[in-house]
Image (tube, rainbow, N blue to C red; front, side, top):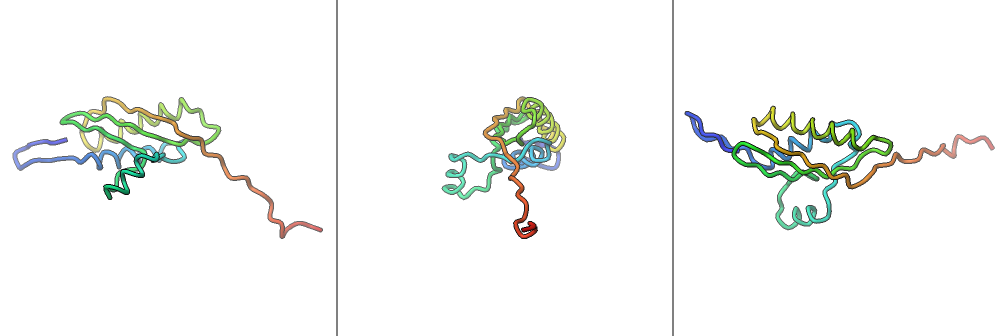
Length: 126
């Protein structure tokens, strides 16, 4: 986004929008983590760019489109998590940047399971 005013030009980087979206996503209940995918990991290593994991944005002059790749907690209602995720991302990006978020696409790439808790063997009575 670029905005010209009386004192100069204001630009908001795509990476800034991606960071805002990523942080808002991780604050959404039911989201375990962001999924970077193999191609993004390779692009990061080749370019050295510190992009937000699991978030791709397209930012125009007044609008933004956001794609997310997430991992949800096992037992969560995926549709509800994704709907809330879309609302949280849209609200956070619009409030912080002034851009109109035209779409938030969510791809669920995995389910996170809680690790099995096993009793400590040292506390067993023999």
